[in-house]
Image (cartoon, rainbow, N blue to C red; front, top):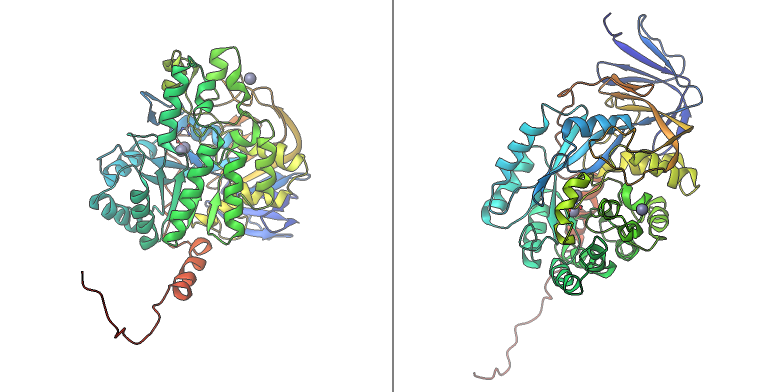
Length: 496
Ligand code: URP
Ligand code: ZN
Ligand code: ZN
Ligand code: ZN
């Protein structure tokens, strides 16, 4: 039987980032056509009863690494499995990273990543591009990628020395180019030199296990780099987005900078909000290694709650996952040396439930802030709002029916991801995506996925996002220093 052409979601509470209202939502041809009560709907449409449930914009995961080749192996969630898992958890768009090798073309890496992702994605996606080395070619390609390829964000690494790391003068140049072309500069903020020294020290002390990963890069290593990136971005009046804010110290740096008026956004991730680094001290090596990522999950158990408080109160702005999954046998590449453990954890499927549980169920944030930090703010910063991130007429029909009362227990036994463990194993979460609509099609319902690879689309993004750049442009207009007008000096000058 042919699928009905339209979908009417009836009786739910429509939740946007600024208000909630009981309303019906009518969807046709991949778009939200109407939001309101007593809508005039053609016959033959599918009617979904959402009474007692929330109707929210599909989640946007700002940070994934599907099938990334990294530290000698390849992440097990590919674009098909990863986006399927995303949909099952109520996320309808991911933003992945093109990461060119040093010396390689950004454009070629971008094309390659599009060719990898396009045939596999089950939900819409977009791409950030990493700047892993610096040259005139990179500078030019940043412009081309922005003008012609729908990218408006570039990630610079301050860690992974000799692999991806840029030094301060290169960061200055890359941030300046971002500013010139209207892109958002993103940073992986950790001091790569200190990590390299710290790692040598830990190994010399005989610390070879996963705990060494955190011990060689304590919080201040993240906080220092975060402050340095903010200082460099401010020097060029470039907007800055700090990816994976993992520590209280780094979060405080972002928060203070925002209070001092800097245009900076902090992205905590599901892992950092839902669990902590104490697991890296676990006696079972495989268990401990499963939590290794960079920057590390922190052993201070008050960290997740603290990050959530800052997220609730707009010191931090938006959430991703850094989903970059390696099974235990891949992690085991570092069984005798923690520096060889492939860095990365899961999150793409569980982010929405973890944030609901730790943020909304706990009473730290309301349902509207939940929508802001899981969806709308990402769309605003990266310039595709209100195409996504809002339940409104003409927006894309990426919609989730969310049951705030339903509970589920997270487990690797039931998750849809390819990785063989789950860092949130056993966590009971209130808040479950009971039905997910992607591009106007029901793709997840009653625990069943109905997806096919390649049905998602690449979402191009324009530069100079107003949410980010309005203030930047005005500051350029009024804040550029001018020289003091004075009579030329006519006195004596010593001769040299
Ligand atoms: O451990 C991590 N974060 N792996 C992915 C690469 C990155 O730095 O984001
Ligand atoms: Zn990173
Ligand atoms: Zn544990
Ligand atoms: Zn990452």
